Image (cartoon, rainbow, N blue to C red):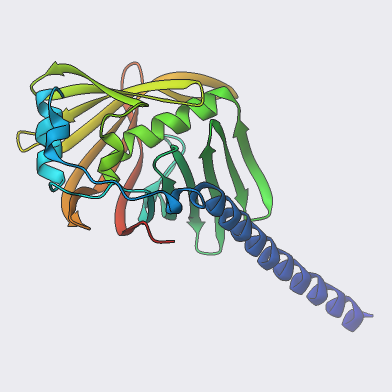
Length: 281
C-alpha cells in the first residue's frame, strides 16, 4: 500500500512538472504569435532615411538631441528587438526581484510586446507580458507560467501602453522624429514636450535634455497605476543614462523608473539593455 501511494505521488509530481513545462512553452508560443502580429507588416516597409534638414523648426534641445544621437542619412528604424536585465518590485515594502525581459517594438504603427520572467525565489518564477498594437493592449502575469496572478486591459491600459512606447523611444530614436502622428512643443533650453497619437488615443511626455543633447529624463502624466483594484492616473518618470553607440545611433543602456506619488517617489524598476537589434527578427 505504501509503495502504491509513493508511486501515485511521484506520478502526480512528474505530471505537475510536465504541465508547468508545457504551459511555459504555450506562453512563449503566444508571445511569438504576437511578435509576428506587430512585425509582419513593419519589416516590409520601404527604407526611409533621415537628414539634418528635417530638424528645421524643431525646439532647440530636440535639434541638439538628434544631431547628437543620429547621423545624417540614418535609416528610420522599423522594428526593435532588445533584451533587458535588472530588478523589479511592485510595492515599496517589497524586496527587489531579479528580472530578465525581451521587448519587441514596431515603430511606424506604435506597437510593443514585452515578455519578462521575474524570480522571487530560486525555485519559483512569474511570467509577465505587456502587449499593445493598433490601440489594443493588455498586461498579464502568471505564477510558474500557469497560475494567473493578474490581467489588465481597457482604455487606461492602452493609454499607458502608448505612453510607454513614447517614453521608451530613446531606445529607438527615429520614432521621435516629427511626423503625422508625432509633434514637438518647445518649453525651454533643456526640455520639450512630445505628443503622439494612435488609434484615437493621444498622450504626451516632457523630455529633459543634457547640454550635449542626451535625453536624461522623461516625465508623463498619462500612465495609470493599479492601486487596491482602482486605476489611478499618476505622474511617472524614467531616468536614462550610460549612452552607447548601437547601429550608428547613440542610445541609453540603463534606465530607472519611478511613480511620482504625492509626497515621495516610488522607484520600481532598474533595467539595463544587454542586447539590442534593429530590423532583425
